[in-house]
Length: 422
Image 1 (cartoon, rainbow, N blue to C red):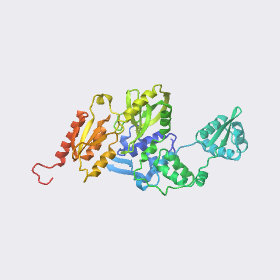
Image 2 (cartoon, rainbow, N blue to C red):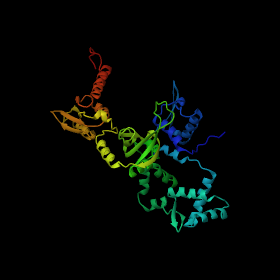
Image 3 (spheres, one colour):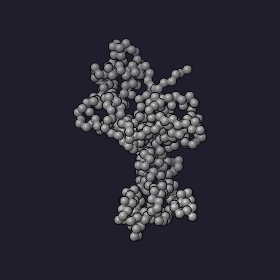
């Protein structure tokens, strides 16, 4: 029977469990029904070995709930990066790694046949040419080795780029690497540079740092390539949190843009879904993998339609065309004293996004929201409770829900009719 190992061959399964621990950190052991209990135990042990200091255990009547609890404002480094440094390798992998680097550091521009001969004559190891070629191709893709054509064959050499030389030659670059290792996409790249040079982030602590982006960064290269080359993708989507499905479903998409929510930090792949025949935004943390497909021949027309639709998105939802067809924009009237309560007006102006704001009365300011999904704006509008005078236009169902919520709040918190103190 195979023993437990902290090293992994396939990051997708580990990402699946880390995602559940971090984003849906309210599950117990029996909730993980997509794999066996032993698989859950192994993945939990791996997570504990990487980020044990941030694991949280809560006992309830349902059982022990395991989650990841991190205050990003008090840590210098994203702990989820640790999972990327746990890939397993074979004996030949690690042996070839050091031998190839040693050979290429002594001589430049060596052909494959010469490298194979040196492995045997200098180090006593016999490798198939195809094995060495595959390893050199892997290192070429990663930028460690350069492959150049000389005549009819390829010659290989080590790249001249050295992180330590760049950092010492460019003032301030070390601080820049520390900063961008935590705040930008692919921060794990900056983190790996720091680890290779034994550096620590001793400068930057970010209060609102969305650590979960680390689990999505593997998808971004393929998504950005598809956007740049106008290609369709096939996204393997995780089963829903409350879904009875055990395997992911595949969804075709023509990605147009990556959206990032300023409120939740979640990122979305926005584009055209041919199966649904409309624009959608897919949460990146719901996508397991991405396969890049064929070029879209009708990209120009779809892209123009997408830009027009995106300009009417208050958040990330494109709504449904059947709901927005022939519908008048929603108008919300707010009461605010422009002298004493100027900060309310400033907030309306600052946060209105694609809506328009105008003064329509003595102390009345009207927000006109011609957006695709009015439901998104109502969550924000409700933060002005007590200042909302009137809501008009838009879907009647949204207005009724708003007034119903106000009525329920009044019944819940308003007190009895004969109560003097409310």
